Length: 133
Image (cartoon, rainbow, N blue to C red; front, side):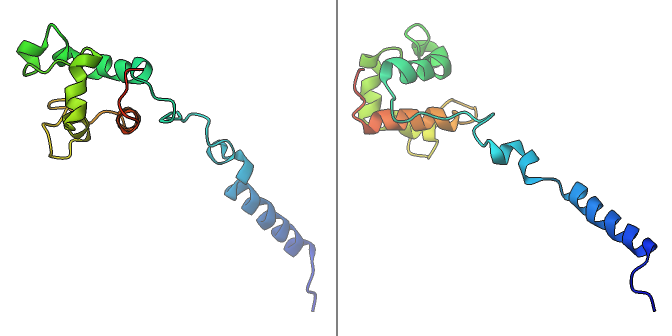
């Protein structure tokens, strides 16, 4: 009885090669090999009012809470300067609003939450004392 013949050998070679091609190689998965490509790192260490917080507030809040729009669209709440935003930091309503946790009116009004990075940056700034830097 023959254990080895050419037909069995070819079949074995085909099985070995096809299993390697079908499963792929670990190194052809860029998101595993290079996990930071395509992802944005959220810096919550170097957060300042002048850099991140003003940008977030200008982009996300001041269409309703700006100096000229707050009386008609923003319930009189002005967030366009450090002086005007500070009371809402002190009483916790700004952070609770953007967290949409039920402790303050959820903001942005009738919209999805801010991006997680924006929320994390504002929270980090507040934890560091919410200084005008």
